[in-house]
Length: 146
Image 1: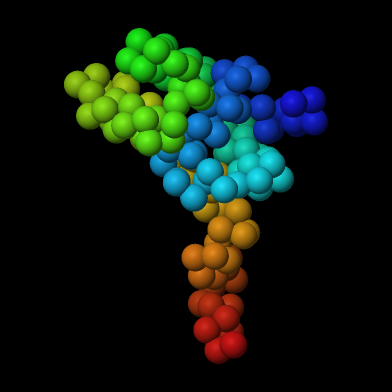
Image 2 (image 1 turned 90 degrees about the vertical axis):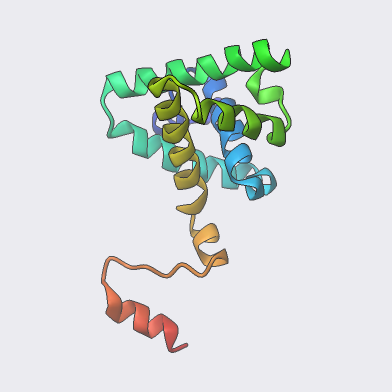
């Protein structure tokens, strides 16, 4: 993917984008229907959010994404990106209940990023009827009076 900007390159190297897409598909089932342009938009949203984080946090996320592949290989004999969305969701669910706090935090972190990438897109906001504005309630009242 040579047209990916630095902000869109997610932690963990080139394969990380595929891993993030697999996470998004696991936590937002509708995400499977994203076309390439919509995925690039979600990817850019996640990338921009991560550029504001410290290098340490980005490295931790990259390490967690690599760990997802390792856990998936041990548990399912396939990389995380090769799992069907339901199996990926099961793995994330199991890790979210781990006794290890770092694993639980990792799951919640990447899950939050996936939700952000999917629902912060203009098309998703429109589909669910989200009309928030930085201008406040006055704009909301105008939207409601259409």
